Amino acid sequence: MTAIQHFTAPDGTRLAWREVGAGRPLLLIHGYFSNAQTNWIRYGHAEAIAARGFRVIMPDLRGHGDSDKPHDPARYPPDILADDGFALLAHLGLADGEYDLAGYSLGGRTAVRMLVQGVRPRRAALCGMGLQGILDTRGRGGYFRHVLTNLGSFPRGSAEWLTEGFLKTTGGDAEALLLILDTFVDTPEAALATIACPVLVVTGSEDDDNGSGEALAAAIPGARFQSVPGNHMSAVTKPELGRAIADFLAA
Image (cartoon, rainbow, N blue to C red; front, top):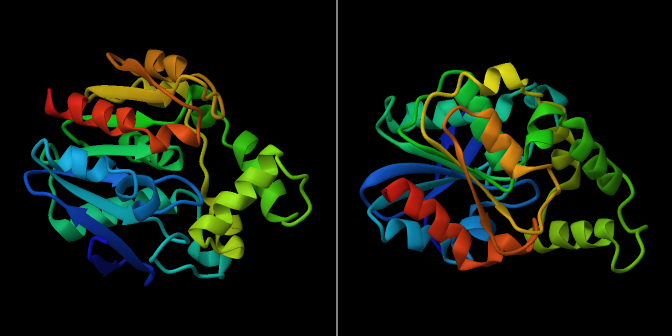
């Protein structure tokens, strides 16, 4: 397992990150219920990207993984995950244009929130995220709120049962993760139109959990779309995801 490092966010929350590789920095953000180890290290994506000449920096979002999981609602204001991303860039001393940015699912949405608030990476890859999940966060947020407030009640094999199973696999803290839902902020299309860096949108060919990835790419000037095998959960397990990110960033 990659060594865990920590820093303290401005509000006192202790946040963890891992690194692998050397070269151009890449801030790589995991999805909801997940963590850096599960999303990026377990299936080899981090090593595959690092092998292309990147220093892959993988935070655990607050409420996830090895970061603090406070149960105080005051620690979960709107957009705090983007704020934490800005804080990590500042902690690492990474200036505009000196790094790349990528994320999966909630990590992709967090990257969007950072982009529309002025972060300036060289390139950005938004994965496992579609336009609907950016414009209206209540849809998926409502689904996860339903799961987290009714744990243990879902029929075997249902989508909710599978989601709860993933929560158990990652050892997620249900109370902290419920508070994460309060941090979600919608992004209007007009804001997406202000994103100026080259962007790749990547989703699984069977993934419509957050709407259309092609539509998200169309809403961002100059962005392009790429499909990889799998649905929202299984695409993370396949090497094509890491390869797509690496190919785009190394081009």
